Image (cartoon, rainbow over all chains, first blue to last red; front, top):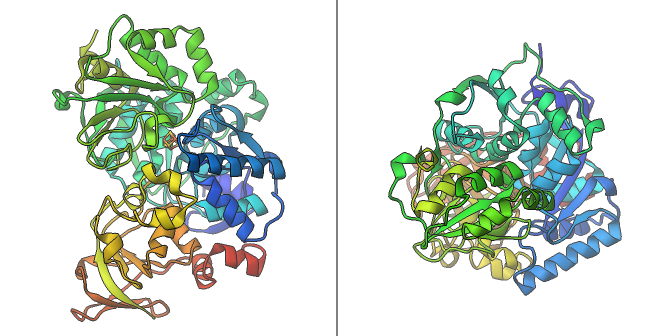
Length: 417
Length: 164
Ligand code: SF4
């Protein structure tokens, strides 16, 4: 009997014949924490009397969630992480170094890896064929010390894609459609595996966007095969030697298969306060917004800024709508400067944040007031997430966000020139 | 045996309800952080919860972030167990890693304020207010062993490694 991507990767890394439902102990190729989960990870590491990291060069800390630090308490946490890195020799990406998941994608993850991060959106690296999943600080502290963890091999739901996206429809609309259909717990404890003819038209940035949000359906991993698109991406990142082709067996057993025709999708929005509360952008016309946020590990890449810049070129944001742009990494920021997108976005009234999580989690750089509404390209719209619990967060693609910044209300991007 | 009063919640209580990101700067000050536990879902929770209170939730409890602070502040507030119809994966693992039992059962049969008795070994919850008895699903052996040791760190300290 053939294997799914999850079964294949976990078999290799556990040295056993891993089948869904099994519990295995697998080697971890990369483990990381960030500045909100890292301090507890370090404390748990110490509470267990661990002295050394199993693999310092496969262990990373990211100061990205609140960076540069907006508060004294955060500064102390940053200091703790810097000191830990210095002592143990692990990798550290300091203030301005970019969002953990983007850096993992750009510089660290390879097809076939097992990756664990103390952050739920660790699933992002599934875009290039890594079994990547989030865990909490205790689990991650133990991986810091032992280089391995236990995993329940997940059942897999296959998502068979066909067709191509229409104009101004993209990966975010695809993943919102999927979560809207299966629900915020539709894939709890399971893996989502993407396949079908439609896959070839999804570039790497699209795949990261989709994999990133697998966790919003409760999934443990969102997995893409490693193919030509993956190889091309790794080559462009000068990491071609990390490439290996990876696909599920043709006779792999799936719990079920969901088919989606990309051509049938239209611009979608997740309404407050759950990600599966999905509606079409056009049905929300007239919903006034005070802030647009284009960024995050979901949609803060070069391709996303290109889409936003194309729509905002020569236009101005609505006077009652703030426009905040958060490039996901220094590489994204530099490429967007070279391509002229940053100029376009600033001329359109946008403000550019340093590479990092920015406004995403309500700690700084765009905190919402009572009663305000934000349209964000992030992955979560939970009550209270971006500041006031009396604020409203809608989620959309960068195209919908950019179009809405011009009109000041939720707008189908196909309706602006 | 665990005993306590049911504190009821609905579906989809996220880690942002439990401990909003806006308090992320307090994550190294757990006592201060714990004052805000669940405030966006029930502003009276921190004052209502008594030592031994039991959270009784609907579907998908704990969805969202990997922040282990979420089960940690729940435990610090005095909650002795969480019952839910279903639980998000990372939260489940985190709670067990802290020695906080999370049990899956049909929570519709429990009302807010009911007195509950939980027998972990028998896999049974008794609602002594309405007399209902509920059974809860079995968790993987490795999780049970971690829970029995009081959490992952004590488990690893005892065994030095994972034991299947
Ligand atoms: S950008 Fe948002 S969702 Fe992504 S890692 Fe940062 S806080 Fe989390």
